[in-house]
Image: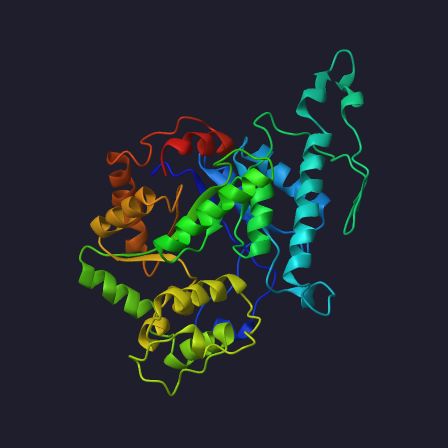
Length: 392
């Protein structure tokens, strides 16, 4: 009803039982199975599934995503992840280093796209009387022999007339950016402030050009964490209640893991500069979050209190609005005008009321401002993304 372009479904292939005490953690249905069910109940909204190139064979990824593409009639998308954990579920002693994971991702994406092209829908004839199913000369092997994968092909499923599923990516490290610049249609970005969004967008434009792609090929879609209320006080109460279980000790631990700083004994108003950082920085689970904190320390000298409340520490490093729909509209306009976003991923949190305000009031307000469409102009995800070049 809100005419959103797509639903984005993240995924992991592991779960930490300790997190289940106060929440579902990473519990979830398989995203491609879930989105296949949703495809039958919808007709326009795009359905972006997640598949890990570290753990899933390219042939399986290609087949599952192409199946979702057919079931949804051209509305599927692939969120390419390299995974941060889960190796113990796949017989591996340790997670591969980030550079190796992205090398695997690049090769996997190339194989998947080759498989999608290996069985073109134009080859189908379906001539029952003549007994002819397809022009087999158009269905060809890919004979891929790479460093990480060997795949003969072709895919046992034809392509869809809408073209291949668009590709999404979320890594913001140097390796992740380079990979995104080479293949992604859009990047799901953690940009807690405008400067981070502007820098990422400019960097991806430069990298994409070096890969021979047109300027603006990679759309930057920052996550927008929303805690919306009818008043600012209501929104602040919602945010506080949502994060009440995040103790001060867990925040100190998060900073220590990302920056190697033990701030427990420091006064809340003490400013932090690069001179306080250890000579050897830790290797955190999420390098993206650590890099964002490091940039903040280098450029702004935040206080201990400020660092403890940063989204990288208390949440997922996303741009955050805690306030009214008016506050959210103003923040979105500011980001777009600054060149920090090509669109956004709405992440309403805390309560269903926040979701309802986002869909029933925020999105229509964006349409009134000319930043979003009022009606769909196409039926496939690719058409939605092409049309969205004129709005967020």
